Structure formats: structure tokens, C-alpha cells
Image 1 (cartoon, rainbow, N blue to C red):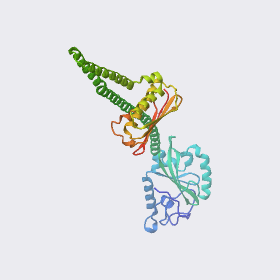
Image 2 (image 1 turned 45 degrees about the vertical axis):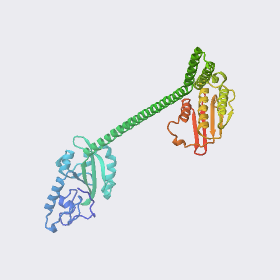
Image 3 (image 1 turned 30 degrees about the vertical axis):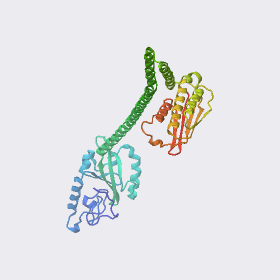
Image 4 (image 1 turned 60 degrees about the vertical axis):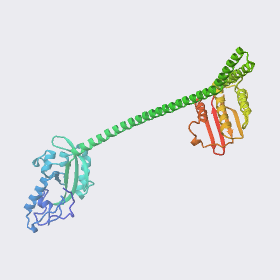
Length: 432
């Protein structure tokens, strides 16, 4: 039911006696006049329309008693003047128990005493108060002393020379309980959300760690597979060299010596010639065996150091013809760790072979420089046909071998090349 303040302070006309004291008239006399607007926000009929005041009073009482909210009217001295059935159910007081009693002393908690005294002093004089025309949330006390939350709407009207207040009161206990439960549920949800967020973060970190571990394992597997391929490639190269060189020379030497032996038995004059040829092949095989051993692990590298081993390697390539080779050694005679020296030697050996055999360059330059307190920096440069590093053909074991060897040391390798612009390989090897 709505709450309103009467449009004017006029007294009711033609529906009963004039002001005669503090007692209020009937509901029809108190709230309606000439079909005017009432404190409850509805319009009621007047005797001018053929409806008696008694009928109006009965209708208004029936309406007020049928609503679910408590309807209470108090005068300027806070005495209860109207009390509907919903108010009886809400507060536990019957009409006979409450009418004429101080509404505030009976129904309000004591903490409101001082404030209500000030409000009603002002209200009795002016009909005004901060609470008039507003909906407030307060605490109320029922007959058994239980305090419960209410929603209170107030309107003012003047009757028989004094101001009265009409209150629409709603018990909001269920709503407050629902709000508290909703708030508790929201806090629980917030807490659960925070827990889930933390769990998701931990799970995300675990997933990331697992992904990183999986990726590291995948890279390691690829790396090991590549090493196996490189080792297999080197073994095949060695087998080819032994088959095409050393094995054939040894087979030829055996044949010659066997023939020479037969010729000697027959007294053939050519036996000495056959014997000499077999001896020559055996000597060549011996040299080939030394070369293969040198290819696997150059003895000069252990005996004389990296600088002299590189000088000998470059001298052999110069002896084969091909491009002009420039060697710049700024490392001098400094010895590195044995494994690091072997890595440097193999990288230069591979890079020099690529440059001399595939680049078609007329000039190759090799630089050996110190790096990072015991490491080495290599630069292999040619001015040949070059290539696109993004599209290196499969089976290009030379460049891959260089990358793998440098990677095993935790070093860095940069390969700069463009078609027609030559190739520059820069490798940095940290100390062992």
C-alpha cells in the first residue's frame, strides 16, 4: 500500500463533528473528505456520491485489515490511534492492548529514544520530520521482546488541530536473512574463486613446467638423434675412405706380392717388378692408414698444439690447389683444453672443406681469436656463391655438424650468407 501526505492541511468537511478533543474520528472521517486523496494513496467516496461515512469507514478498515503490511497511525504525542490486523500479527499486540499507548516506548528499541524525542517535538509543531515521505530500514521490538528488522514508510496528515503520522511497516526479516545468506554465499564464492584462481595458477605453472620439460626432452631427443646421424655420417665417410683407398691398396699389394711369389718360384724375370709394385702399395696403404687416423684424431694436435695443427691442415688444402687461403691467428701458441682444441680444429676443418669444395670462391679467410677468458672465437669467410640459410638442403651435414659441436659447448654460432654474396661463419666457444 502506498504512503502519501495529504495535499493540504484542510480539515474534513461535512462528515462529522468539528475538533472536540484528542480522540480521532472514524476511519472514513479521518482519511476522506469530499472524495479527497487519503494517507494510504487511494481515493475514497464521500456522502455527496451516495456513499455514507459509515460505509466508507468500513471499507477503509476492511482494506487496511486485508493488507499484508502493518498499518499504524500515531498522534503527535506518539499514541497509537490505529492498529490493523497485520500489525497484530507482526508485533503480537491486539488492538485493545496497544491503542492509546506510546508507540515508541512499546515498539522501538531503547537506542532510538533520544532521536525519536527530538523528531516528535518538531513533528508536533510543524508536521515535518526528516523521515516523512521516505522509506527507512529500522529495528522494531515485538511483544515477546524479540527485535527484528522492518521497512518503515511514513506520511503525515493533520486532523482536529494536531499532526498525525501514518506508518506502513513491513517485516523484512526473511529478506535480511536472504541478503545475509547471499552475502555469505558471495564471500564463500569469492573465497572459492580465490582458491580456484590460486589452484589454476599453480596448475598453470605445473603445466608450463611440464611443457618446458617436454620441450627440453624433445630438443634433447632431436639433438641426440642428430648426433647419431652425424656420427653415422662420419663412420660412413671413414668406411668409404677405407674401402676406396686403404682396402683397395692392400688388396692390390696382396695380388702383386702373390704374383711376385709365384714368379719367383717360376724364376720369372718380372718378379722383382711385381714385388716392387706390391711394396709401393703397402707403403701407400700405410700412409692412408696414417691419414685416416689423423682424420679421427690428429696426433699433431696433441703433440704440437692447435696453431701448428691448423697450419698443417691449411697447408694440405693449399697443396691441393683451389682458393687462396688466408689464416689469421691472434690466439698465438696459447693452449686450450684438449676437447676445446679438438672442437675448434673440427669446426675449422669442416668450414674450410665447405668453403674450398662448394663455395666456388677464389679466396677464403680463417680467423682464430681469443674469447672469454680461455675460450675461442672463429671466423670463416668466403666470397663464393653463398646460399639462403633458411633453406638449407637436407643432408648438409657440414653446417649442422658445426652447429651441433658449438651447441654442445654452450657456445653460439652465426651463419650469414646470401646467394651471390658469399658466406661468413662466426662461432664463439666459451672455456671448458
